[in-house]
Length: 401
Image 1 (cartoon, rainbow, N blue to C red):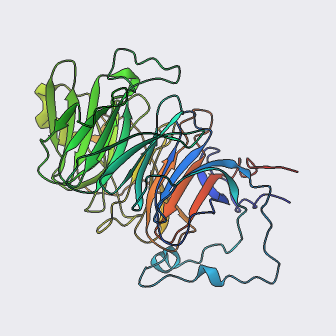
Image 2 (cartoon, one colour; image 1 turned 30 degrees about the vertical axis):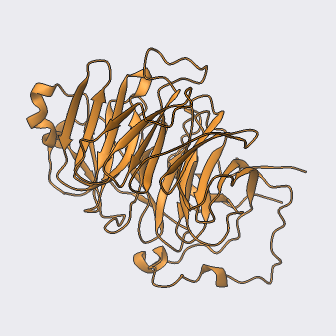
């Protein structure tokens, strides 16, 4: 049994471009979310079947058996009214069957509604998930429930484990004993994992519309960063008790921080991903818009919450698309150089378009390991989740014999 063949042609050795495996096991309906664990060894998904699942994306399920050669590509037909990537771009996509990645664990207890968000803590021992308005903390290994919280008035859109490092330290930050949840009710709530109290530690109520994403500052910073449909990216400095709000001018559906936390990419509902340096002095806030770099034209984002993510080496920004594609934009984070100070929507960098999904691809995740910037997983409303690798690393998946 061999891994899928790489496409013809070359390209950067770390450019994700080849589908190498598929995550099979969720029931019918969309896979809403995909995330890597902090150590980059495993990935998590949340689906419409009211389960979260843990996978090893680079090992093939020993029970996997390829379909007989007579199988046709009928499964590649589009679902309902979705416009597939092959129709949108006018080029066919491969119908090669992908092997199944190894399922590790299923988390069903406590999920009474579809699972729209998942996250793992810094030590990769706790799963944080949300089902409608309820947050659950579950032991990642044993699948036993640890804690449950509720209180939001709208569906939870994002969860995060704030602060912490793989060794359990928090560098003086918020500490990974604090969990954050962002909701349609325009609030972010912070929860104490060490307490049995069901009351939040703090409620952040500055957003004027749904809060779509929440994350902690990189490198142990005592910061909480949020994005909202009101078009603002907010940074809460917990040490200084200060709030810095940046008005992007367009509804933000998700954001991603570069590995050093210095740059941010924000996916907006006008179909543009905006990149800028978030560490510019406050006194120069009025100049922020001059350092926007805009990535657009190769993905579609108008009606769905489409995510973007930096690769671990910060050389690429990955994006889903409503047409089903995964789009890989090359980026140069030296935003202060030359034309990077221009806000015009002039030619975006040439993107690599990956076609496999048939429905909107709304969630993408990049492996956080510095040694594996070429490893990416995407999840789609068509119920599929695909593992991607570079052409050079297309044989990275291991087969148990």
